[in-house]
Image 1 (tube, rainbow, N blue to C red):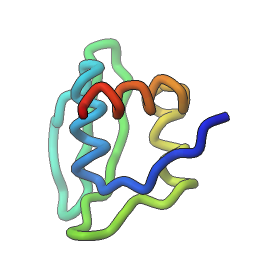
Image 2 (image 1 turned 90 degrees about the vertical axis):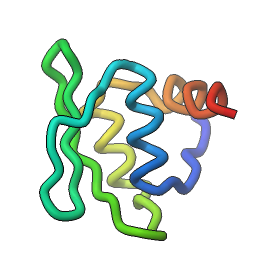
Image 3 (image 1 turned 90 degrees about the horizontal axis):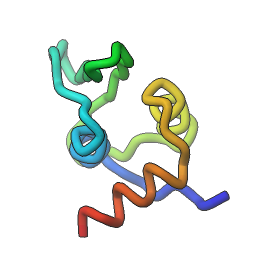
Length: 78
């Protein structure tokens, strides 16, 4: 199983946007994104801070993405 990189909230938002998630609202430092099929994820966006590995795993479960799929999407951004 590949290791997840340390990412900021904005980087995660950009990657999830590639698979159809759209920002539906922001309350404080938390961004809520929704997919057209009903999946919803909340991503914390704190300036200069990375998302912890456990929280990133939870975000991927909510988005129904595997680590491998997420990493491929991240690589395709380069």
